[in-house]
Image: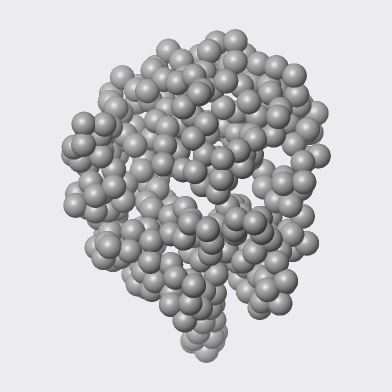
Length: 358
């Protein structure tokens, strides 16, 4: 968040005040009860959520669950860089039933290239130490997986196997944030060049071709699920409506924080937990576009054979200054090649298995 186009974090509190937590809990409970939801998910993130401290995190989880009540299951997950993750934190998360996701980009050299401390030192050693605690039998049930950002400078299979070394139940590979006005590294305006597909395909082959599946890679699993007619559960891909709102530390209700990569103010709604329901977001044209599936896609996407799988790509990746979000993803060539490759591999596999069956 500190390197995105939107720098509004500079003017916001570093952590939520108790009054804001209570107001946010009220709005969460209000929404869950109004829509008769039986389950909701709360994601604690930042910045770095562990900087808020154990007392603030415990307060937030406890107050939200109390406000929602026992009829609604509240799944809480915390996404952290893990540099501050220690036994006292894990004991707290065990008590609160809070799942833990950790950001890790590969081996030590790969990770430390981009993820450094405020003092400029690499953070891999601290993350590896924390993961060593998390995978212990005592805390393993809290472990939700690893999040890794694709870096074209890294060898893909080496990066994947470095993540496997920490026995993750799931791995989430994210494309780096970028758009047509601020392209991601290596992404040029050439439909024949597909550096991100070229990076991800060897990882897919290693994952799909393994004798047994030792982890779930969400991007690949989502693509396969969509190819066989399922619905997406991720903003990265597919046409399912956006189902997330962000509550900032000052209580502002915003759209997905990934939109901060587009331009200053891209996430702003003008709504606040003190005065507005979450449903108010449904009146915003910018949010409506993320709810109406194919009708919000660019003409190029509507004519594309894989649009129901790609879904136009992540909404933030479609932005172009002066033209808004009504464009294909800046990763369009990569997504087309990756989806086509996975489709062909899965179809060939299914055909072979059908021939083998009696």
